Every structure is written in structure tokens, then in C-alpha cells.
Length: 253
Ligand code: BGC
Image (cartoon, rainbow, N blue to C red; front, side):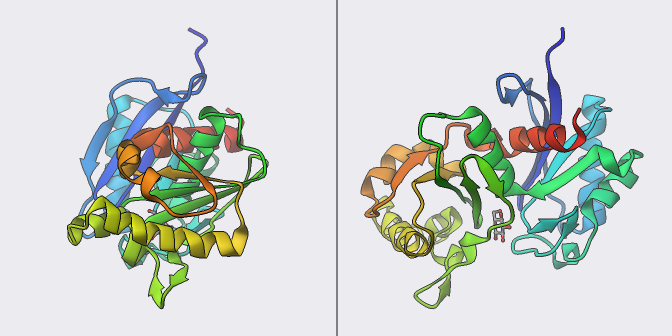
């Protein structure tokens, strides 16, 4: 009754998740639906799944959709962990067409930017002034940069070159799993990565997100970095929540 609702879909390398979002409190408004990402994760195949999720909820309002890619004006410009066919695809137009909606109803944004928007909007607010970076540790490393709460979109800090390597190939959470690294060994890699990042942008606060933020007590205390690092509060649903917030901001709904 009078509750502000939105809808978000979070597209990842392994799963596509969507749900109605309670925009008052910044939380899922019910059980989310997760469907495995089709393989290959071509734009058309992914759009089918997005439509299936939206239809299952019977959602007819504006919606936000995340991609693990740089997204400029609805168009995907990179594709690090999804099918390369996304590069150059007008994702907003594709989803709108498949859903039979006007393009103005669909907002597409980078997944880490969405997670950051959720965290900045609904997480702890006492220390979010200045330069704040949210990093998502998952299959890759995503980043969202904020200055006094204002997003600078499409930063790709996960691809910083550290010791001659693309950082996410050394310090993503997936690398910990693949190489069966101990928390100590992985935290050493993450520290090295954050040291490189903090030398370049000197953040006031780093928020660690992604699935591993659930186990923050195991690795945050092991980090050897100069910036304060805190665990994200919204955890796995941040992408969905942030997408819904972005849709409301852009469509004004
Ligand atoms: C992509 C980013 C994305 C991140 C997390 C990186 O490989 O380049 O755009 O935000 O993975 O999914």
C-alpha cells in the first residue's frame, strides 16, 4: 500500500537474478528468481532469460538491468566475463524490444556500479563522504567510484595492471577457489592489488563486496593496506537493488 517498488535484474557469468525491490528500505521485496546464465551468453539468449524473469513476476513498470561490462548510454562496450558478442550491443534497446516496452523504461548499467549505488543508498552512511570505492570480488573484480556519494560510472579498476598481470586474474574470488588458496595467500594478493589502486586514487574508504564479503571476518583483518576497508552490507542482492534504484533515478518512476 503506497510502498515504493522497483525491479532489478542482475546478469552475471553464472546466474541471472531478478526480483521486485522495496525502494523504501533497499531490500528484495520477496524471493528472488535465479536462472543459470545460458551458454553461450549471447545477447539474444540472455534477453530471453531476462524476459522470463520479468514475466514470472508480472512486472510491468520500469526496470534496471546490470551487465558485467562497461555500459555507455545503454550500449555494452566491453565483455570481460560474458560473450564477446555483447560488445557494441544496444542492451537497453534489446531488452526493451524483447519485453515490448519503450526503451525509456529500461536502464542498463555496470554490475559493480549497481552494487555501489545500493550500498551508498542504503548501507552505513556515516563514512561515505569523499572518495569511496566499492570493489566486488567474484568471477572478476568490479569497481564503483563515488565522490561525495555521486557515482563516476564505468571505472574498471579490476583491470589495473599489477606486477604485469590483469589484477582480476590474480585477486578475484574465483582465483582463490580455482587455485585453492588459503585466506592468507589470497589476502596477500588482494593487498597487493589494493596497494596499486590506493597509490593511484587515494580513496577515503573501500567497501568490499561480492560473495566473499559474507566471510569478511576471515580476510579483511589480514589485509595490509592503508585505506580503511569495510564489508558491504547488502551482500549478494546489491546488484538487483542498485539496478532498481538506477531505474527509478533515470525514469523518475
Ligand atoms: C568487468 C567489469 C565488471 C566486473 C564484475 C570485470 O571483468 O570488466 O565490467 O564490473 O568484471 O563483474
